[in-house]
Length: 246
Image (tube, rainbow, N blue to C red):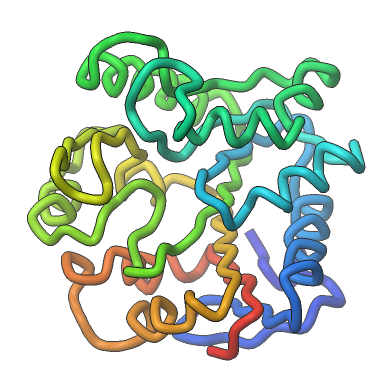
């Protein structure tokens, strides 16, 4: 996979092996991501969608413009609870009208929540991922980085990150930080993220400047989950699109 060919006329720089596209505004950054998806994805592509507030406008634009071509769409991570609970990533994606676009285009969307227990939901989504990673010859993920440099649903909690790093069999995992800010979550593991063919990291907002400093600075992955993207084999297929200077 040649990232330069995917980017075409888009200007980028190489930082620690990651191709970085700096856009002056969130609107222009979203435009870059849409162009990359247009250049890369087709009906043989599985698209992995992260939650959070950062990609919301991007999803709204994709749903409105109706030009995205993919074979299937999946979630990267989810806040556990009843299906479509008010804090769920699935509900956020639905409210952008992206799920309606997928339905209209006969693009199957695979949600995480199914009203099962935390553990059973994780196991069932793990099975779905194994099938889809084998079925689709191309995969691309839209990921983000939190203010504390967490990424996907992998929290900036050293013992949880250590467990996920050491797990070389699971594609999906879960944890429950009942008294913390993360709560109960289900997320793709580092092993699953490493199987994506193309990783697009969208980082927008002044408040993310420190997170990017942490990511490109010193420290272990256990302390800074987003440093996973700096592993040479991961960096080689990663494009960071941001409105911040790195």
